[in-house]
Length: 159
Image 1 (tube, helix red, strand yellow):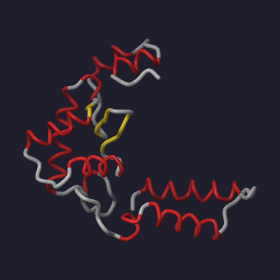
Image 2: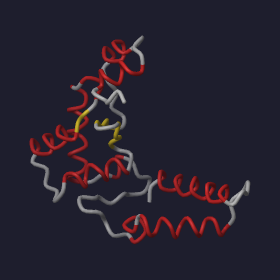
Image 3: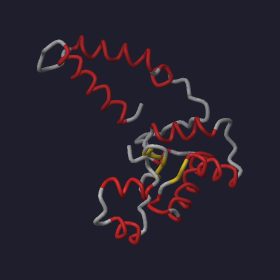
């Protein structure tokens, strides 16, 4: 279970209390949320790994990545550093996996798991690798652009 999951549980618990017009959550709210999450995310609560998933060590984060996922993330980071703004499409992630000969049963499941664990962040249809900063020139080129222009430059939909 990740920090993001725990934060989501806390937010859901607070929302459950607000739905009952209360200002503070109770033990029953927490139990309701845990039951909801067990139904929605059985893999998280049963310990069954997702296809292409990796096990998280103490502390989470990239230091807990082992083997193929770690190698894939390093290759994605190197590729992101060469891209405008550090953004990668899913197709580019698959191309990186093919180029390095990634040995996992399902690249999509691994990408989703890396996103879920906060290692690979999804922005619309594009991904960024956590901790990889775009080149200074990319940041300078975006200064003064409107949010719409910035989104179009990054390849995001303007809707």
